[in-house]
Image 1 (tube, rainbow, N blue to C red):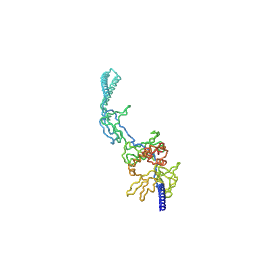
Image 2: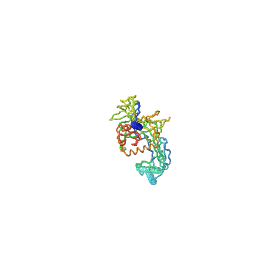
Image 3: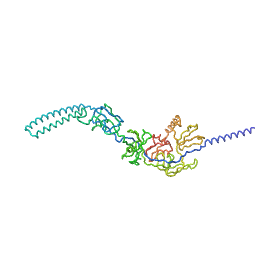
Image 4: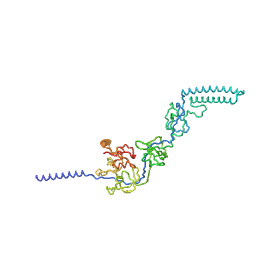
Length: 473
């Protein structure tokens, strides 16, 4: 009996060891992965550069008074349409005490001289009639009288100008400020009762109003020195305005500055383009805008998303699915790229499937039917054990983090990421000509969004020669 019990115990222990070993073996085995694939597609691709700037009216006039004084009345306000010659404001003249005193004194002197010249002319006229003096001598006194009369009139006019700002008999008064062009009033920087001064050699004068022709708009912006050699006058621009969503405006490039401007360590060149189409939108002067300058474009070409490309020694590769979950690395020849899609010239046909090579994934969330909907980013390795029967899999959609993680989980992830980054040194990449953010991200196997976050980038625009943080080590 004891021998039988010992044998049974040995068999049980041996079976336990076998079971534990098998369990540990299965646990340590890596689950097979499932790769997502995509087919090439036909698309229109345009290679372009972006200029940042603003929209301005071509003609913007500052209206200034012809005399100094106090604004008595303003007849317009910002936003009004005015015609050429329309009265903008009226100026009330406040004479300067010194100038007024001098004008009155000059008038008295002119009147005295005039009266004296008149008496002398009358006396000489009697002598001339009596034949005592010649006509030539009389004419000298007559001329002197006429000169003194002119001086008297000038002194009277000057006094009236100083007092009222307008001379007697003058058709156009200088106290009225009139529009010199037809257009829209952009700004009225003064108010009634404020003092204004006229323009002179020592002062620009006070601006009463800014008037511009808003039917003739231009785009003024800056282009990086690495791109300025690729553009020329006459090129078409597509302008987007941040304040007006969903609309594009056409413009034609009409000027490229021959001299660069240094800005934050880079050289920029100013450009100007005439806006040719506004699509009936209400555009205000000074709107910030971005202009896409089309350098090269192709229509209906075979393309793939640029993130599916691999780069090695200056060559481009894709991973082609040869059979179920079996892939082959193949060199491809690429054409133009818009930073998102790239043209395929050789090495890939439209019926072949390419492995996704994205790097970010989202956590599974509950679906409408009670099942689990897993959103899988391009190229994510999805374990078979994580895909249950009946599970719907959405590949390549970018749901917002709020739909995937709770706020507490996001905060925990951000805290861990910041702590990890603080302990590491950044990896720096210097941007080369014709590089895009996607290519750099693929080169270093990081997400585009991470590069944008690490470098505080608002969009995918990068400048050749600049340095980017592409990771940490």
